[in-house]
Image (tube, rainbow, N blue to C red; front, side):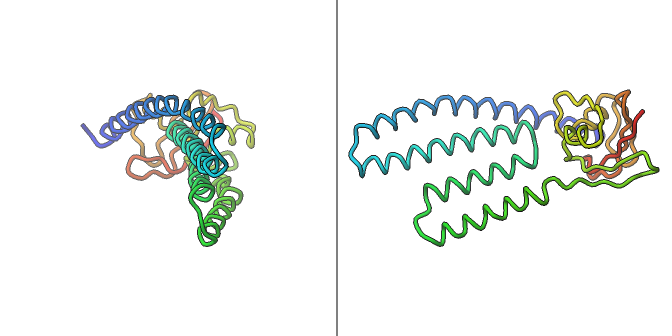
Length: 209
């Protein structure tokens, strides 16, 4: 088994593992939902002090379920924005439920501000450089939906959200290795791997076929 076949086989194993974990996570979330209603019932029949403590618990419970769902989305979509959302939710849960002093609140606020800055000014940056007046170079992590909208392309990416994942599937379909200058086509566009490292695509150029 050569290196590229090994990487492809390992990628399939990881995908299967992610699917299994995702299914277990969904089951866990569904099982945990009824507990929310139990907390609400206890709040209704409890005194003021007890209700406050219970409300903190139900808030923590809901937020951990939301974090689990966001983690599930991250595992299936593999988008950079989902990582930011996940971290934001974790910080929010810590700040709203467990922070009991000004230092914790200050650190959490600074962390959230940094995340918003990253999302606004860094997440949407795409690597673009004209090649021969026809091609553009993109990070492999760039979402195909954004490329289609910005450049009026019509890439039929199906279940693949990122350019790298889609190109990798085309290479795998044609039994081609992931290497620099490797060319593959989907009949509408020609994709050239411009940068790759250890079997992972880093940037791709696109040209109409």
